[in-house]
Image 1 (cartoon, helix red, strand yellow):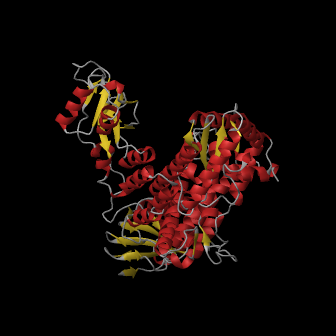
Image 2 (image 1 turned 60 degrees about the vertical axis):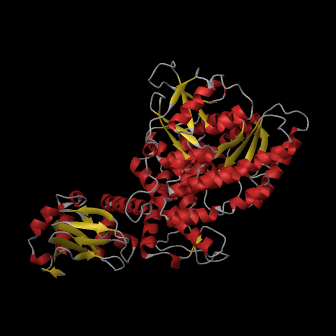
Image 3 (image 1 turned 180 degrees about the horizontal axis):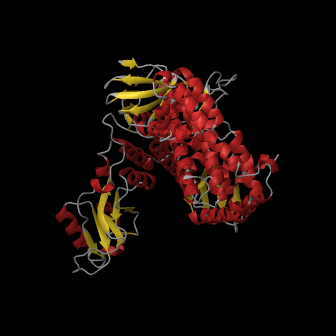
Length: 636
């Protein structure tokens, strides 16, 4: 229980003033304001174990710890932090609104100074540095909130298992000259389903650089079924230069690599390329989230579009499961994208099987959220075709038919057509590599607002099927253009700033006033979408290759386009907003409704409402900072 021990007039003002002058952010205030601040404060004694603030209750004070210690916990009891002399709490309610989303408890007998909200707001308005300090403090709270969404009931970060922890056994290796028969005997003797082929001689006990891998499936399919002489060198049937992962990779990263490529064995290598272990799908089955591997495996087995579509209909249930298991939003959207990639690749392959081999090199590229590995439920189609320049007669008709096949197949699998017709069925988005290069050159060197708005999605692209070198050529060309496209970047920045977070003047939520989503909050437009656009501008301005939003923000910070703190804050904000969206979509799946990005305020807990306000404020601040980097006045 708290016990008031008088007000500011009852304590020595000089002592309080001196105390404040020793701690941020008060140390930067002028002497006159320091004395006024000390006079406005009330000293309160809080016994150990009593609450200074409680989740769900209103708070109207800035609280400064004078002596003692406190701890701060979120609505689920997760520890956010501890503080002692000079620690300040309470700004999440003073700025973000009541009730409180955090509890603050005295863990020692504590004397605290309480400043009423009116005085706090007066100081914030008069001193920008003072206000900025508490903005950063709220951003730190958002970071903790974002991290708390990705923990299990035991508080352990999910999907953070090291791949090396799964592959605890040393790899079994042979050299390239060993016979197939001897390799099979080695596998049988060690009870393993794969064998790594390394440099070196047969008598060299030290594994060299990895050159290939042979699996039990290879022995059945490439040796027995093909009638290959078992005395032939194992190198004749191995998979050369197999997909690998670094030894310090996370199990989740290995899972994604295996899901995307539909492989069952993935070697781990050290910095010199020598194998240190092998992760198998059996190892990954120990992780609950590996159900995505089953999905991709089932997709690969389908012989028609109807079968692929039937498997794809299991994706919403996978998302619901992952949300229930407290997987992070970033992990979930990467898994959803990986499974979606498998769906699209299989439909492309079925189309080629139906139409015959492609008459010329091509690259099927995906765009937007899928290219960024950020696909959620309810996504539409966004894709295009890059073709070689020298097309034989009839080639365009072939690729038009392939595009039709894939689009119809994706519709059957649950991916609606792009309302803006950004699909390979549109002849404009089915061009030769040189025509694509001219298109991007025109967008960057002769920008208009409408053209840039249409084109922005094409700056988030990734090769999915076909000749990936075509996409590499195009991406290299684009990255050579954008850093010098000042007017183009200004147009992009203008769009990013116009995509305002749904916050009113007094930090209340701005809800849709009409239409199908009346009285709901759009989590995508001014939240997730705004962060995506901010990251895109910063990355293209520096010619940075990543397209994933988090990777772009980190690369932009490393390149000096923004501070590391700003990048981290935006990453935390993106994670939290995306998490709220996925929880909302999982709820819709359970109710049998179509997933969307619009949430009613009544669905949000008090913690979520306050944290969303803080996340949207971080976006707004980043947008304001962007206007200082690009001359928006030059575009109309």
